[in-house]
Length: 442
Picture 1 (cartoon, rainbow, N blue to C red):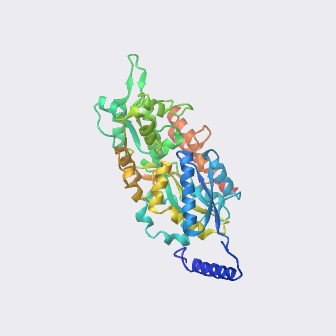
Picture 2 (cartoon, rainbow, N blue to C red):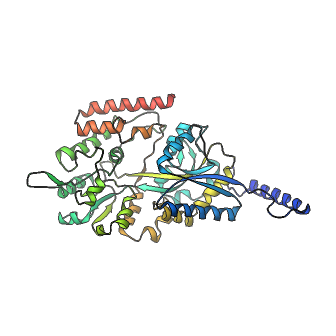
Picture 3 (tube, rainbow, N blue to C red):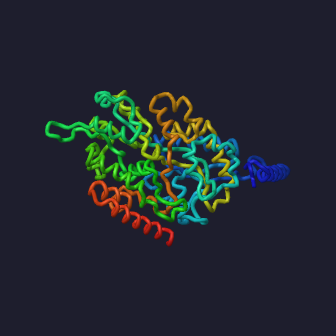
């Protein structure tokens, strides 16, 4: 097993290159004699698109100057990213290496032919991986016993609340448990003289209601499927607990709007307008956006680690990683490039340029990620990060934020329509299993 990409294969190549160069010199040739190796690399776009492009071009120039390897960089817009990676996992056009996501699903789709490529034999290139990175982020680069790359960005979702409204209600600090979440939500909910709600105490999340359900299910102790992604596991007590909790928030405690699953519902807008007190799970880009674009909100909001459910704390976390694609002939050059990008100083630059939190502990301990209280809370939340990806080719469809998706329909029927829980859960389990079976039978 190769323990370093700078080992015997590379030394042999360098010696061969030197010999060729000397022979060409004897024959009177001058200038570069051997074609530089080239690799194709794709990345999604982040933050300020021009600044991101400039940062990546700086990296490719520095890497070529250091190694002689030219990186042909292509920027992929997020609007087409999922379809491009789905196509690559099914045998379509793919680069040598890339900034990727949803390893488990795309690996399941591509099998051992297409899509993400294991680089387990190069694992020792990063000898202190477990110490350097948050445990939750490493779940996103290990699958089915193999190692696929280096996590570089995260989207961890803490709780956010209006500190000005909390102070008016006599509350201090964020809620720590589900019981406190209910208590805070009741105190933050306001009604007019006719009993109409003018401010809701709580929203589960700002956009995708299926994603907002996911961390509550984890906090209740649930898992959606078996590790191989073949068996649905939602007909359980954790599902009953999570759905009952949400149903009570809407109909018993009356602190969560019954419109929270409808298209056009804007938790973020209500939060800014003072018509919403808390969001239980808020995407990573929202806090920096508030800090940078809404100076009038300064001192009126704060973050908290997600409230603990009956089985503990879990924070929804998305991530991206640098990995290699099956079919490339440039594995070692790609590993070199990934190793270069994953140096702490370069991970720092990536984090600052993209605006994403880093899964590397050293970066998150930097001044950049510890100069404000909300950044410190994000650091704390990373300790509870739970990967949002699952090893099923149909996971994206299962948690789609649209009617017809299994999780969406289950929550809507159980909470909004208040159907019998046992019936809803049993039928949802059956539907989910059928979707998963169909994926593996194709």
